[in-house]
Length: 306
Image 1 (tube, helix red, strand yellow):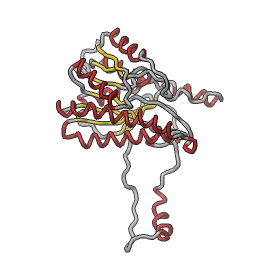
Image 2: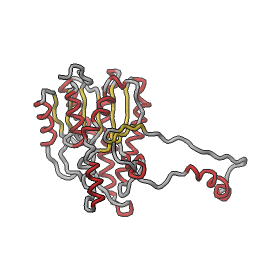
Image 3: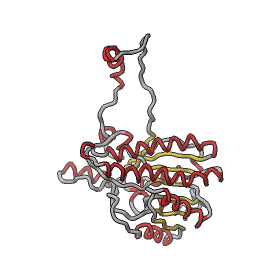
Image 4: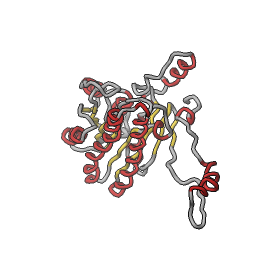
């Protein structure tokens, strides 16, 4: 038996917790003593359809292992739905101590083919959802003098990926939102951090596995289970991370990374200012050594998961 529960007495809301990473975090949080609000609308990966079953199934699993949880099936994409998630926590358990913004959908296509509808749908769940749920929790955190936000970002945004302009933009927006929350609410003891997860879940299960090389890659990816993401999320939600805020982490199987954040790396100066011609002649060549390659996540994470 665990005699030292990391989240003992805390109330944690996890969005998109009906499956994958959200489910793993919800189960792990409950095992560490948290009372959990399991939010999931039960939509398909593309956001279509509604099924309240997944959230309730996770609650039943938590209760079956002796934990405490309640289901919420509202959508994070609208303020009212997001507010109901926090209200469920407060009305059921009397408080809210941590929020994991994990809910997500995909609408992948190359940028020149992307419809405004697919752009909006992804922003509404990932970015707007992150804002709405965080905004609903913020007054409670402020009043009680503490709380922790954990936002699931992605290397698709932090580094880049093909055919995911909507998803990449939303995840980078969520990263900026997290930093702003950390800055604005640090004086109230409120923390906000991001985690970029590598895990085999519905979000990457559509990767092709036709050739032998593709099959071998998928087999390696399948070792990166959602359960590998949960420990870092639990740490960030716990009092042990009381001094950690405004950071961007990444988990890949047994590896944990701390990401850099954009800062100036080179500069040039010219008395009297610049023209387009002098920029081409002087500034661009001087800065070129610092230009970022047109790479994608797999180019940066080029070695097999450990």
